Each structure stands twice: as structure tokens, then as C-alpha cells.
Image (cartoon, rainbow, N blue to C red; front, side, top):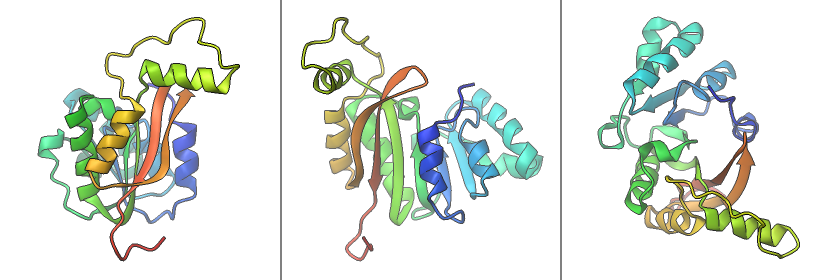
Length: 201
């Protein structure tokens, strides 16, 4: 299993430890387990039963076997039964688990918004589209095209698509989508927020 994201853990280190977190697409507990160890009340879900079983085994060391059953659940986007306005943060570190089409991205962001408390935040990443990676390399380098084009990811999501679906899902930008390289892969990462008329800045 991959190590947890340093950026995500640093981001969450600045968050009050009583914030309720949903790890949406939790994999084998890659972030669920360290966030529980930091003291956050965390729930995780993933559409793959075999992955959920491994995540439950990991978190059982912290919360016990019985609570692990409710802490980590098997759920698709169509069958998530968490209530509205339940979480301060929704983390979808591997959003592609739920699909990569425009509508898939919209559904993920819409569900995140539904489950967020007003003023809540969502942290998302997807595999970066080759054109965005190439553009970043061109603008951060000497302006010349990259010698070797970036590989095209089958499940990549472009910055353009992510921005369009974020607006469609009625989420505000807290940290604009950017291309990052972490653990040997390029991803597009962003933090969005559910903003209501009375949401404090």
C-alpha cells in the first residue's frame, strides 16, 4: 500500500481535531488510519468490498473490531447513506475510484457537498491529464515543449473539467486546482468549500 500523502496530512494538521472527516474512496485505510491516530473522528467508505475488509483490519487496531465495522463501509456513490451536513471535511484522495467522466466528477463533488456541513471543505485529487502536465512543465521551465510528452492516463481528469464540475456542484474554490507530483505520479489536486450566504470567511 502507498504511503499517505504528506500534503494531505500537513493540511489536516492545521484542522481542529474534533472535525468530522469522511475518507471517500478510502482504499485500504491509507489516510483513514493515520487520521484516526491523529485523533480525528473519521469514517471511510470505498466501493470495493475486498479493500474495505483490509481497511477495517487496519483501523480495528485503533477503534476495535466492532467499531471498525461502522467506521469503514462498502458504498458506491449511488448508495452512500451518510446524512446531509454531517462532515467538516470530505477527502477524495483518489477520486478516480468513483469514475473519471465529467458526470462522475460532478456526482462525486455533488455528494461531497451534500454531506458537508455549511462551511465544510473537500480535498480532491485525480490523475492529471497529459496536456495539463505538459503545460505546467512548459510554463515552469524554459518555455520549450517537453522532450517527451507525459503519458496519457486512462482515468485522467483535466483542470478544465474539474473546474467546470466544481462550479456545477456549487462549490467554492479554496485552493485552486494544480498539478502536483507525489509518489511518482502526476495528479490534479484542489480544495473546495461549501459556502452558504452566512458562511464565515
